[in-house]
Amino acid sequence: MLERVRRGDNLTPHLSLGALHNGYTPSGGTDHWADKDFLLNVLGFHHFHLGTTLEKKGFITRSNEVLFAHVTRAKFDVLGLFDHSVFDDSSPNMTPARQRLWALHEQILLGDTSPGSFILVNAISTSGHTVHTVRTAQHFAKLIANVDPKLDDSTYLKTLYGNHPMTKTPKLQWAFKYLDLCLADDANQIYFLLARGPA
Image (cartoon, rainbow, N blue to C red):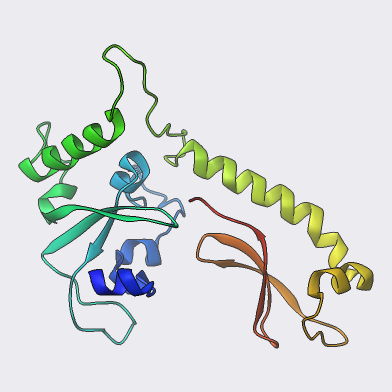
């Protein structure tokens, strides 16, 4: 797993299947967290399965232990290995694994902070998403609304393509490349980056 990280491989096969099936779509049930990764949204930590076999659907076999890491575009900081009790939020008391992860979060969050300082953690909106995620989605929506009408303008398209090959009538579609907002020209296998997603 860590060798894949060092090489810059795609780590999507190691992620939870919940993101694939649910993502950020409301589940429709009474539990607003059922379709969201609470620990990712609140703590900002990703978890990765450590299986060694790639299944037919393209995901690594699920493992009993998961690796938690703080991930940015430039860094992959390993926090530790945890069993699945780290996800158990059904009882009023935290499991030892969950307590350990929260303690790591506080240690990272507080860092060199002076005693008595005020710290705002990941603010959560009423939808259950981080405020940063909501603001990013709003920014992307405005960008799409601004750029979409220009896609029928050949002059704009020429500036977009620059030196890249362009068919007479390119068929562009909105796409995400990981968390970055792009325009995709599948015929020429080109992605035009319009806005970077969260770090």
